[in-house]
Image (cartoon, rainbow, N blue to C red; front, side, top):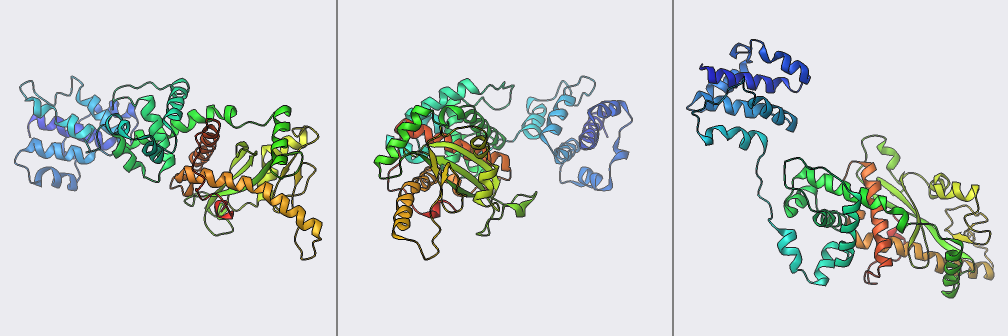
Length: 416
């Protein structure tokens, strides 16, 4: 075996060690007597019996088969460039010396080119909203927020994802049910970048949460109360509260805790909305097996209401019969078959006012289709994405970017 081939074998053996050895051990062993006698019988078979005409080509193929991770590939390239490891002679051709970078470091995949730069600008206003579920004005607003709240230093690798493209990727993920692989193909990015951008988009919106999901001041509470009363509701109503389940894949850890009463795994969103269907408070992340009353008592809203006067001594919420009856939470009379006419009328009026929270859940799921079912395994990411969708829901209402009212937004199907 030539010296050049021997150096290739040394490099391959170093690649084999990367999974088990620390970086220091790796470089300590660099000067040790590594040679073909250290090869296993299966490695020798690949190396010497492969269908290649040239020994060096066999070794290249064997090295490539040993690369198991991005870390391995990166470290191998660093080793290949060390002057004491002269794998390629000065007389080697460009194509011969580039094989490692082309094959060992990164593989080129065929993707859709220039979707954001060429195709998206051609969409009509209606087509754009159908795909991304928001208007172009909302996208421009989110792009500015993304630029101000996300800071990332890119060092080499794929070209940097622009702020507008990152926002479109995040919106597309929430608005559709495509996999990360399909998204990476559409937006011409790698799978890892697709994962990263979706997470950064959610983190960006979470930083703006207090701007769009906030508890009303006393003056705002008075206006909300008057609006509920004008719509035929109760005087002093501040909002309506309810819970909504979001289907997920059963988590590996404590998966049974997420199985709800309809026998599928889910995460619960507890939401409080006003007469405009704006979320004033959200609590997300509790496993689906918990009862609404249990989620309620574990929420920050309950703790805050018990400790201080957030209802300004006058106002209250409307909740269904799953919730306890409190001085600031009004529930309907339980129908035991003996309700009086006044109690029946009270329940009817209560239902007409409280149904607005279910309408809000319906609009939320109707706009962002991803919420119908999550395939992510990370419960933490799913929780972030649900809150992100609630923030976008409020932003769209405040900017008068409303969905058509023919969206299926009524009935209890939106809760479970």
